[in-house]
Length: 298
Image 1 (tube, rainbow, N blue to C red):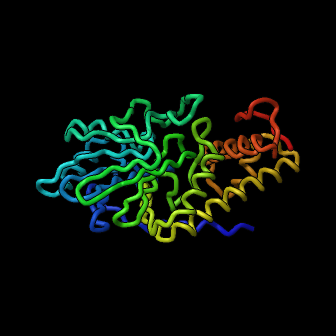
Image 2 (image 1 turned 180 degrees about the vertical axis):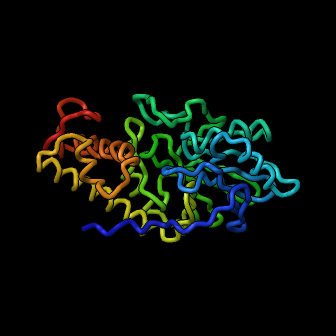
């Protein structure tokens, strides 16, 4: 039996208030709690004076105003940095850009890392960065530098950002700590997600700051647990197939019996992502291209 993921969920939230986390990092949390955002989107302010804002968040006027009100006198926003283009991360960049003139930095529009293109509920299809980033690109400001780490999987355009001065990683939704990450095909890709997790496992970041949830103080332990969890899910799928359970809805009922029913649609997306991965590797079959209503086998 795979040990459970050591989730990190102990967090107190004071909406609309900027919290100082370290000499270079502040955070303000948007009032958009949900089963998929935990308490809400954590927007990070990096630096002092001319600052970067990581994941401005959803298009909520009160959240954008709270970001502006939370700046120290005389401070300005010089950069808006986007981990990925879901509607709880990037839409507020348009509002904050109008207020500050700060350019946006990101991998590209939604689906830009996926050669097939995507149509996905929950995506911010209106976002295109002013400045396109690729893996290893460095964004610099007064006393801070952020290195882009391309971590496709949750989305094809997902980036984490390493703050070199504090040896920490802003992990976006790639590693959240309070929950496992939902992988929604076609833009979500399980093979890419696992490869990105292994890439982070080889890094030496001392702490992660995810966009949802509190700090992750033992990143390697958590990342390995995420990998083990995904291995366990694929073993469960193989067991279902051996028992003649060939459809995703029935697999979800078995595999996620202890998960509330309202989360089963998201679980079905991740099961499909696993099955696509398994079909690609020759560990499962499907009666056609792998799809939500497909009939799967061994």
